[in-house]
Image 1 (spheres, rainbow, N blue to C red):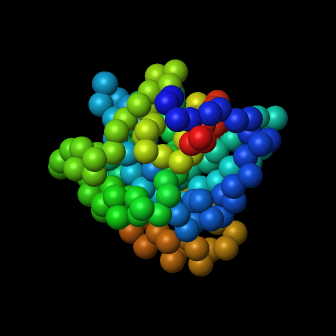
Image 2: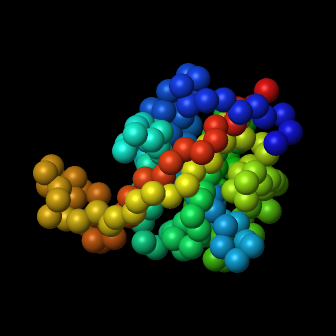
Length: 169
């Protein structure tokens, strides 16, 4: 946890719209002692069931989904602009085919058994609470289903309790 300090969720002053939608995040989990990550620009932060939560959505073909499904925890990490090329690479390549984390030069650290990247400016550690696959019949705005899922590869929504927020000092 070198160079990080823990803050309370109420102290989090960053815009999730900017962090997730514009700067992107890495979703990282471990399975059988191996970490995998993916770049994402969909998700959010909020309150659900009286808990501070993060929510993410992952398509079934993403290799990282296997890691999320096989772990109780994951991290969301956010980086400064100098890492945009690495985030693009991690979003375009699959960990099934290569050691994509190693190729970017990023380093995995652990807190409470949860993997995160030491180069991040923010790391949010999460514990899964809920998972459900999006259902076509549940779309009120049916055009979104047609537009975003022409191949019927609907995301799984994960809601997770935020257990720690770390910010670079």
